[in-house]
Length: 205
Ligand SMILES: [Zn+2]
Image (cartoon, rainbow, N blue to C red; front, top):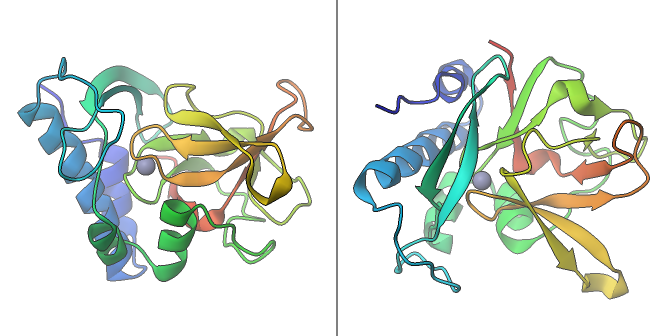
């Protein structure tokens, strides 16, 4: 029996921000678990996913509110229409996550935050980064030297704006999160350069 991720539920209760963010979390969790129970995990994959076709099944690592790995589940990707995403997300979060935008440096709420906890996807609640891997990059964007799980993020080649970069997407809902570079600190040497509006910080429980 799969139970709702307590860290997401807790975040939902604690969040006194806009009602839209609460909807995001509820929607993400509902989609995640409704999908898990209603779909066959061996469903055929669809290279072009849309809200009208059966989403591809992916492996996602589930983390507790304390940041402990609990299990790996095979669940359908969270796929929604632009209209559904717009209802859940702020204008800025939609622009960044669903249209591969970039927030202005030093404008995001997590650029200089030092809270202890997990950073989850603003769209679907998927665990992405642990604050213990966050560091001061001086770039004006929240930066991490490691993703919480290689299963939970996707690296994709991005050739936009005449640059060759590695884009980072949410493994569960394909939200654009930011980019990863090779000029980070030890032990990985990586710098995950993220957009604050793509993330939702949940204090460690
Ligand atoms: Zn996501």
